Length: 324
Image 1 (cartoon, rainbow, N blue to C red):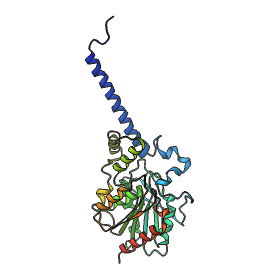
Image 2 (tube, one colour):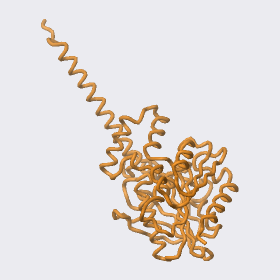
Image 3 (spheres, helix red, strand yellow):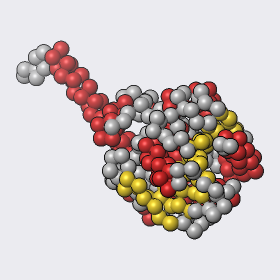
Image 4 (cartoon, rainbow, N blue to C red):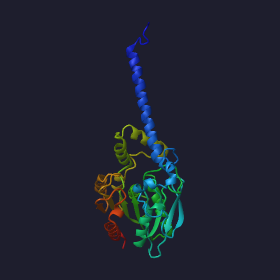
């Protein structure tokens, strides 16, 4: 009987080619899965779709939500809307404080959360004498949008919200505050040339250095895989569908050019956004800056772990930044 393998070298090359093709297909599928599961709100793999009936309960620890309280806004608020640069209708809650004297806090939630989950923070800013605006980020809550920007697309949305307040009161004074993805959002917004001059301070709580760094950390901690090639492919897919790459979406690079004072806050026991990112961000910032480390605090839990030091530091920082 004649052998089917008349040319062993040729057969071996075909086998290698098939093996390489399978690896490439697997990596491409992995990249698409990361994009679909993490960034695409309408994907079958998305957390929103899979856990819609749970009202984002599993994501509360990553978003600043207080699961011991109602997810209602908690103050007398009205629905407000802006249109993003790319045509999305964005929703927010605005609670006017009659004693604010034109002071506003715009507070940004974290990944897969929404404005109504920020009750704990809205209450405190209200007590500090601010009117409070809590938007639903694009592709979150009732805001339009399919793709999440992890802070990068949302940085321009933050400017749109600030401009809405300026149109309402050109003499207003605005602080941008954010937790986790919201922290990245306000840092990324801080260096934009179109940021209204009425924004006098930024407070970020447990934001990440860049989308690439955060995803690479999560990929390794969850699967042990390196960022190449799966994350690289996911970044290319995101670039094609959403217009940004993971390395481009960098809070570190943005704070280097920020002219607005920034308070950096991070819990020392944060295992979701690494605590080490705090020093990298703080060192990169060339603006007036301050940092607060909260011992024993896990991700997005600094304000509940030590509320006294948290809010006294925020108040002192903002009072020191307030235009005279």
